[in-house]
Image 1 (cartoon, rainbow, N blue to C red):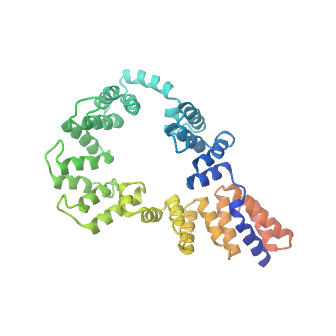
Image 2: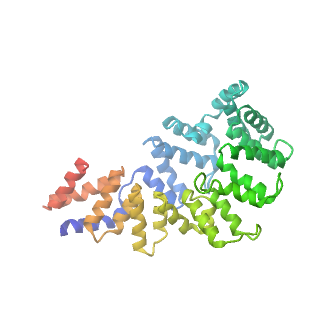
Image 3: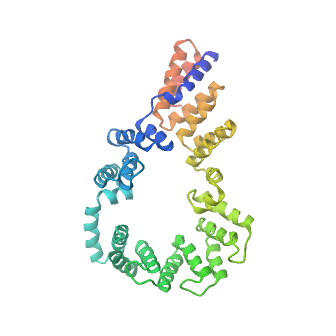
Length: 370
């Protein structure tokens, strides 16, 4: 076992230099903020390896632009189409890759009084800043069948006066209708209208009740809005402890929410990790570069929740325990991390050929997948 342990230790020292898949290389560079360097690997993963998410990633770079990457609509469409061809369930890729074809179909359907199609056209027109067309489609879609997209954009345009004269009362009416129909993401806006007296008579108690009805069971993120009422002196109910409790509930369900920002980045990642978000566990681990024990704890959690990078990170931190390092690497392999499988097979074969039975056992285990 000592010889196998030495081989594992030596191999782990070279872990970062070991061959990666195009997708994993792109991801590692992307996490480090090296977008330009990641793009060749992203391209290969998309075109050669047929990884739809890589097509989407590079498509978004050319769509929105990044530091050092100029926006290029034609290239964006090309990658979005590749993404959609590989995964026709990805809404963003298909919407942007085949925008012209979809618009023609939706215009015909909206004309035939299909509310959902009118809603999609409203969204598309709004994105292009054609507010008059967006309002027309949104009003028709909302009145026809109370389509969620159509009503949401209709309320928004009434509120901001886009494509129509500003009208807070009508905005409140549409938002309130959505909230009452179970579109709970609109309820915090309804609460805001009540607490600040916009488009309706000011009623702080009513605004608070709107949020309490859906926090946390129906819409946990509303807890963040409720927390804001307790956070400020403005509403006469300041309670910092209660506010933080509510922010924590909201953050557990959406680590990108405002509630997480109020708690701080590391804390929000840890909270999301407790809620079994593997990527958050991985990010929390990386925040503890100077605390190997905590780093290993969060890598272990990321691994437990099915994130192969967490398993590989835990393997690298377990250098002094060959068996444990091998187990973590094997978990990464089982999670389809090809380079982990190759690494394991290489060091196990070397140990087996050197007469180490434990190495031979690992070779057999990797081959059988047991």
